[in-house]
Length: 152
Length: 128
Image (cartoon, rainbow over all chains, first blue to last red):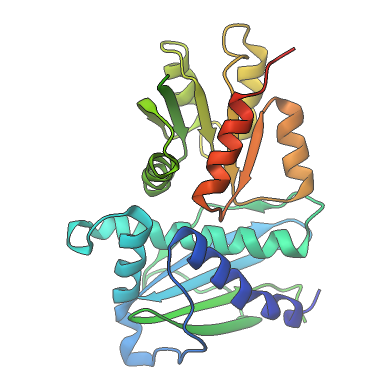
């Protein structure tokens, strides 16, 4: 299993999840936020294990996260709490990870850990992401990255 | 006839989403019940009948697999139809959950009509 295999799945995963569950769409490749913009992003990580083990990370611009949460929950943005928006980002990371892993190992079971919202106090996974891609979405960007010691 | 539906998922926002999607399907729903894990769901089901249960797999305290297993082993609850709603759509997992007693399986992400079709298929099945 190579990082190329995983990398080729990130865009289809994001498109499938956003279109079916969030009634939204990918707008094409995006530019990752610079260091000064990191505080305006929400980040979640979900560990996984099975044939391949690792951690999937998802970062979403805060405005995009609110927009996606409003679509997901069928509520106006101003009615949403911060906790709801964070939970939706966690659920987004959960679904992206599940979609990708099912494509990689469709015959065998895999285990997803509990998605967690990440703040600056959380420890970074060891090493650099094996795969990382940023996409433009409504009102911001969505970055998906994968940490796994197995991938080349 | 209106259905009483239970939604079992540790994610509060996922429970909201499922409730809204069921509403979008146009199915007549009388009452919704929610639980954050299998153990809480079992407690509720032992007190009130539900026409259908939608359950996640990956939950704390009691996961969906154990929840379905316990339902199936309970004489009073084994006739409650269960549809699994999970991010895991591997053949192994689907087959395993159906063997344990789930009547249907929906993989996330899914369209509202997919959930509706699965609910109609499951509720139309007669147990032998």
